[in-house]
Length: 446
Ligand SMILES: Cc1cc2nc3c(=O)[nH]c(=O)nc-3n(C[C@H](O)[C@H](O)[C@H](O)COP(=O)(O)O)c2cc1C
Image 1 (cartoon, rainbow, N blue to C red):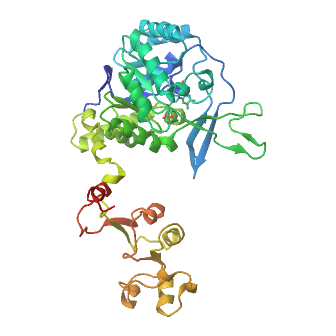
Image 2: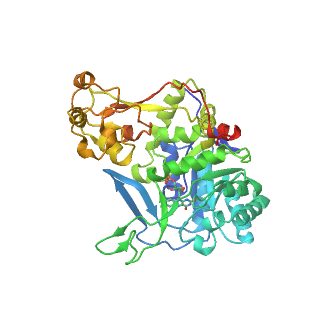
Image 3: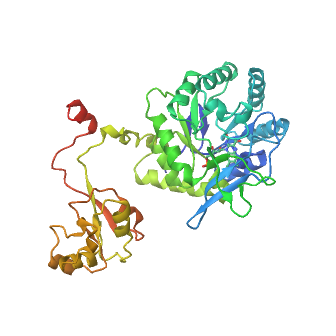
């Protein structure tokens, strides 16, 4: 079985699966249960000067039958006494010396940073994570994402921390920024040992149209919160990969955002993160999802012939390029499996109204053959040269026809087709050879 152990800037863990700072890491009792279930590490719920939290504080988007596709929260940092937290950190580390316990911190002044770092180290923490990402409540107090959005402040506070810390320090970034490289580079310049991302995305999740109060409702009012869960994974993947493939980011990355399955985790690792952290999926399904995460990743690594998880790290990074480096002469077209097609015509409608008008119903083709031109509104409804009465006749009438000469290969039809495996995008021979936009510019062609 592949070796799942990881070492993120000196913080060792039996596997790459850590709990992200949040409700699942609020207390020692929870973290010990999580470790018993199989989690390799945990980032403690952010400690600072304890706050008063509000009720209610969560709201979610359910989409197409899936509960909590996206989660919004207006919870702040810990509301439990620091003393209790540090006692529990000590207890957890004593009982689970092989697991990673990282303490998330957020305070304001240099003196406060000095004191809280020492207390976390005295309690036995393996590492620190600086919460420069919380996009609600704390940023209004000059902390959280207000630090993450100001590269100079981020660098300065990181350098304060590095002055005092004897254990590895991760800087947790906010996605609420224009170019993630800017805060990433500031973290490196400040001396951080690693970067974790993403924290939540500033959001208002919806409005209750009966009460006209946005959600979550706090006594008839609401406020913007932080968005996370499956819906944010693509944003997190992009940001993690943008940092991982930049040579100036010289520190390892912990990937966070929308991870629920082993495949999600494997994607982050393949794009270059050394490990992953999970919050919403645990809030949804509980700690036991880690069993599937471990089994799934282990099997995948075995199937791929990889002996350790570190072999996977960054394996897909080389396949991410700037748009200008993509081959302009590469092309795909859809093939519709007429045995699988149920004749729903969704691909026809999508292509007609939202695509490039290259899929036609055979009924329309027949009308066209008989001289009735689809009300004369769509000139492309005329049959393409490849279509004859015979070919049309061999394919059941409910199966749409793809005009391959006109198709631009956008994928839309295959994305909306409800039948698995019915529409397959297939590569068309590239007769012109590879050429990217950057190459064309270099040749003076564009
Ligand atoms: C209710 C809630 C509370 C959170 N509290 C913290 C926190 O105290 N510190 C922190 O760094 N991140 C906090 N987060 C953000 C998570 O650690 C994580 O970065 C984010 O939720 C994205 O991961 P996910 O999609 O797996 O949830 C919180 C998230 C939620 C949902």
